[in-house]
Image (cartoon, rainbow, N blue to C red; front, side, top):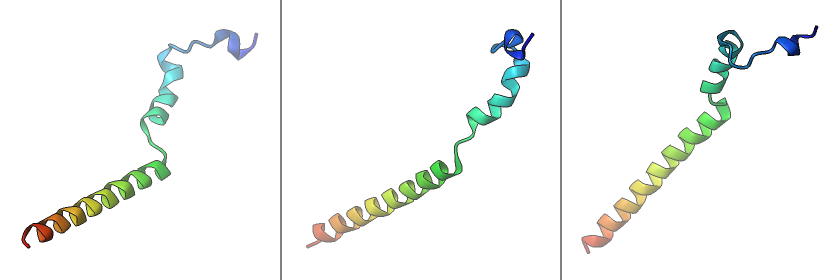
Length: 57
């Protein structure tokens, strides 16, 4: 008998190894997300400053 005949995808033992894998994001995705968030906030701050300066004239 092979192991595939006894495979139960719903058993807690077989899911245990995959839970940590499912919860983690790849490192590249996290770095890209942080970079986009920082760049987006810097751009938004620039636009805010641009409108504040233009509104005072």
